[in-house]
Image (cartoon, rainbow, N blue to C red; front, side):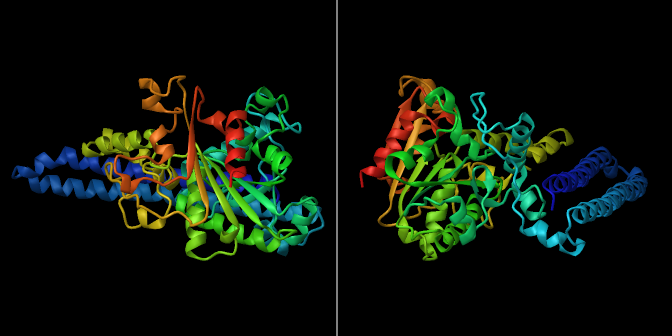
Length: 453
């Protein structure tokens, strides 16, 4: 499927889904308002009987109106689906493809959202256009906010879980890997980005830090320690545990397809990516995946291992709004609570299914995090930061690197039994959350962690 047609189809599906969900929300608020306004009259006879009769008529008319909106919405969607199908057939025929092959081609073809990497400091690598960057960032934000919904609906805008090489989706086949990695080494380092990002986040401020917008941790590990760097692009709105399982499966595919026998794997995750890396290691070990005995190091850079304060604050706000049974509070509460499962997992740093499965996702400040063992023989490391020069400054203690506080990144709790036993770690000062993903000082520490064992 043409990538622009695929984007258009995904956007179209999302718009019509949004209309339906908005209609459902308005209908619920309408029903709540009607109930509130008529309830006092049902306590007074003879008004009670009349009121119930009027309400029954009102509810029937309202239900019919909302049902008609949904019917028209889906009807128009089906008409657009038919039109999109004609366009796909026309493009396929123009390119010499048989129309019958379009669906399969669309399913199997890699979906490339960004052809080059942008240096977030303002420079551009490979001549990426502003439009491409905007599309890539928009898709990553959309996946972060509503990725679980896109996954459930099998929406074409779902970024999935794929390797990205030179900023194109990398097909997992021996031929593709041999072609793209002619100098592949037996040691591999794999980078997984954070919430609402793509792999370009590993290039942030490269021009400022290195005078070269193409430099990142991966390129430096290739030069210094002869590791082959690989980068992940994925849907950050899915449950972290689901992404961990998909990541583990993808690593098993890598073992089977890689041009040479892999001897060593290093996982480096920034922010949410650190949790996904830990989750993948857990599930890989539990399932005795073929890649897990190659794993040597897991480095969590600014990862909210014990939770993110912003998500905790949103949970508190949503719970307070929901506590007041009024249309004016219920609507914003439902909108807040529609954020993705991936974001909600950040509240306490959930990495496995058992921490959220069969649990109320919006329960007020309920911590279900489990004390999970780390994989034997693997070195786990954390890197944390504070935006203040003094790590003991009240502001630094309160906000950490802006997104993650130091105790969370370090896995430290007041209860020793619930701490995450990292082998080692380091706290930087005067550094923010995003710039940790490509800061030269952070790189040196990562390199030393890997070299030390």
